[in-house]
Length: 393
Ligand SMILES: *Cc1c(COP(=O)(O)O)cnc(C)c1O
Image 1 (cartoon, rainbow, N blue to C red):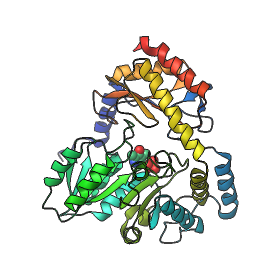
Image 2: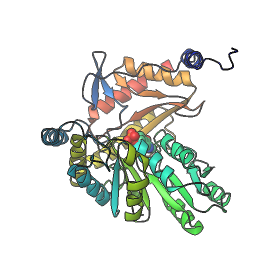
Image 3: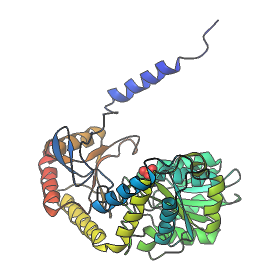
Image 4: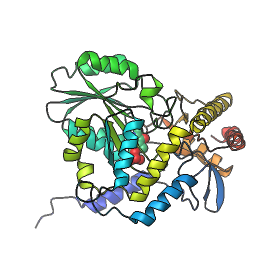
């Protein structure tokens, strides 16, 4: 018998070798502490500028208490997918809170933000439809676009005029979804939502915003990008996650009753992936409550981020278009980003190098994320480390 196929597992091993010899695939830091403004890695306490725990809720005592109470009532697992027997009252209660937070008629809870994006785009659009998408949209949106089978028309990052060109290119589609991240995770800039909404209106397109990094961060009461721009009520499909500012885990879709109910019968993550553990949902309820009652946290977050970004700029670092707590230090070549990250680490600061394929080749950076939980002294210490590390990149 002749062998007609290359051995898959050998090819995979070769590819991995290639990635490693290019400096990729380094193992992640392993924490032996709770998530927080400082963490312990390899026995060393580091100032943590790497997490998405914007409001410092991941280990907040109120959330821990809510989760612990729920553990004793409901146990550790939910036991099934939502429509079978995996819906508990805490899941429904959390959905109502999230709908309120997002000023939407209802919300649907799914296992993660990733599946909220891929499942929603995949379920709502199909052959004959088109999706107009920012070139820097999150991987889960891109996967959803591919899953849907719709035509994909990409526009230049944050460019409303180019979005119009991308819309015109799919003028013959049955339905058009215009989709964007609210806050872009690797650059810390904000989508030009008012312009995109006007554009969508004039072309009969529907807008979906992924507020993974905006919920709890942007807007007077932390409701996200729409509130930030005074466009509340104008975004028909809002995606969110509980895994960032809300401190836990789980994705959600806040939308009209029909969209949410449709996703309950056709959304694949809801139908086919087991629901969040009830303790996680209970902690989520506590998180939303805290977010809406304790506005000082978000104010502190905004002020600290601004001060930290200005500090980096004074040191001569290029922070790009960042206007949020996500502060990239743009370095270009991969080795410069990894050198800066290592130099910071030696000085007690954890800020990860972000390289291809997470960002385009030649656009490597170190990403620093400020949280409300960092003290002024911790951020000053981090800035001193950035200052001292300048000579090592
Ligand atoms: C993190 C992230 C997601 C995925 O959310 P998870 O809850 O972590 O799965 C989706 N969109 C964007 C923009 C993100 O940064």
